[in-house]
Amino acid sequence: MPDTKELFNKVAKHYDKLNTIFSFGLHRIWRKKLAEKLSDGINVLDLATGTADVALEIAKQHPNSKITGLDPSNKMLDIGNIKVNRKNLQDRIKLILGVAEGIPFNENEFDYATISFGIRNTVDYKKSLKEILRVLKNDGELFVLEFAAPKNILFRPVYLFYFKNIMPLIGKIVGRQKEYKYLSESTLAFPQRNEFIESMIDCGFKHCKYEELTLGTVILYSGRKN
Ligand SMILES: C[S@@+](CC[C@H](N)C(=O)[O-])C[C@H]1O[C@@H](n2cnc3c(N)ncnc32)[C@H](O)[C@@H]1O
Image 1 (cartoon, protein in one colour):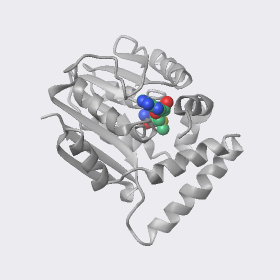
Image 2 (spheres, rainbow, N blue to C red):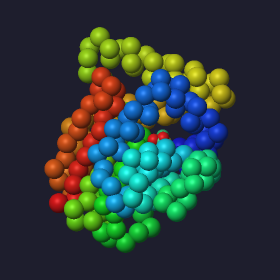
Image 3 (cartoon, rainbow, N blue to C red):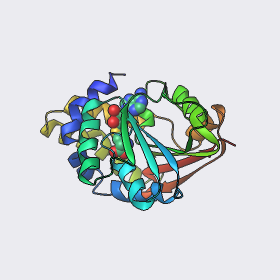
């Protein structure tokens, strides 16, 4: 696995634009759906926060929430901070450098943890899950958004062709073919559906479940500390 911090520093400049192109704008709907699962007046840790879109969506939907966004890529966070400042949300959203495998907070601090399209980029995702469990409060809950290959036998080959060929090609146009090739390959290699649920259970999460979004191309997983 390449150094994902450096990889995301390299793609940061184009990240938001390419996210919209690759997902045909659907990434906004996925994030909205994730934020709808949370309640207001809460303390949230958004891991792999990147350019802070999940943190901003939670802040918008839950006006009394406080969000900490954590990410190892300073360039992604720089863009996130510009967006947070533009919306005057500096008192509610704090972005900090860090990795999910070693979260710089004490036990039982957060009502919710969220991680959107980031768990697969961590070096050790099981270690990350255990760390997330540690910092959640006893009644805390984790929500994870991640890509998956659809099961439908007609749609699956189209999707796989798009993911393996078109995504790296668009990456090439912005001079980042290698990075986008890795991102598409790492997505397809990462555990999906019940396999990921089993990892969550192994790491100590309870009441784990998932729902499929957009024809099963994206999965929203959840699990509770107790
Ligand atoms: C595909 S981006 C997702 C960003 C954002 N959550 C979103 O939905 O747009 C993946 C993010 O994971 C971050 N990342 C990479 N390794 C990580 C780690 N070990 N712990 C936490 N975040 C990590 C990257 O820096 C990058 O910002």
